[in-house]
Amino acid sequence: MPLLTENHKIERTSTTAELFAKYPHLQENARAFRVKALVDVDPKRLLYVQQREFAATTPADNSVTVIGSDDATTCHLVLVRHTGSGAACLAHCDGSSTQSEVALIVKAVTTLSSNAKEGRLELHLVGGFDDEAKTSHNLSLSILAAFQKQTEDIHLVTCCITGWMPLFQLNFKSIYFLKACILNGFSSALTELNDILTDGIHRPVVYGIGVDVKSGEVFPASFPCRGPAEQLRSARTFTGGSMVDLYDSSKQQVKIGPCKWSPNKDIKFWLTQDDKTILKYLSTSPLAEPPHFVQHIKTTIQFLLDHPNPDSLFPKGQPQLYHRTEPGDWERVL
Image (cartoon, rainbow, N blue to C red; front, top):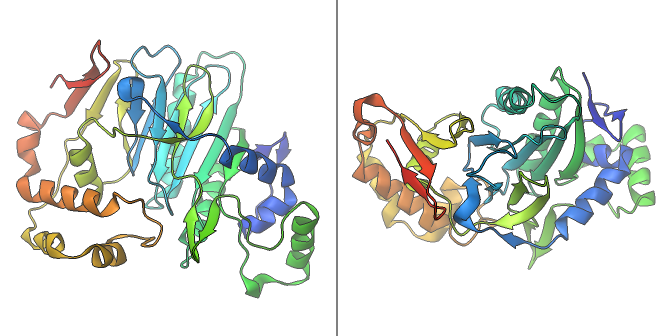
């Protein structure tokens, strides 16, 4: 079934600028989203999603009020929500395996919505900016294409990404779309939807989002707490771990691992390097990373050096499990 917006099928486009020209209301929705107040989310009822993780739950969950993720530069934050059941799934996608990841996201929501008698699946897509390599643009198109291949009807509500069209595509057809862009409020093929130029440097406007699973509200967000087991989860991703389901909503537990990586003393090299070098070689967007990026990388590397054999972190090969305590913290139960 098709990807829809305002109950109309979204046609395949070769650029994001063409998408916004064809469906100008998406630009309006994105502009409205990017000017929403940034919410600093209280960790007491937060379920935080790191890169290459997804998590899903329903309004009946007593342990989670907000699912959130941030630090997305070229990465995209993908939220699917069912309006009938209220089930929501948030994923932090980096393009590692987009097609299979989108299928997992949709399945997580439809499984939790099997008893819903009405409602529809809605998609909120936020992330990316005008990076030099156009990594953001390509990932946006890949994610949209993956949703167009799903069997369910999915309605695109928020599309706060960057709109861009390469000059070599400026043929008669694309010029028509650019004209539509201008008529609908764009000044060029590059839209400003999630991109801001500061001191000559492009950066995302929105780095993070949250969804209130009780009300369904989606909002720009930042997170002072990224647990539980922030370093362990970061180490899993740093060493090439694939997209993983973080949360068992039936048990209201965070599940981590077991993880696998090989000892690598050579990574100690990075702990001696300056910030500029780490950003250059370990980031897809060196000039746009948040201020804590380098320290986060160093902390992750140190964790891997301190735990060269991950088996010690998972006794008897069992995952680490965490549940919410009465005060609101995540506590390990296994």
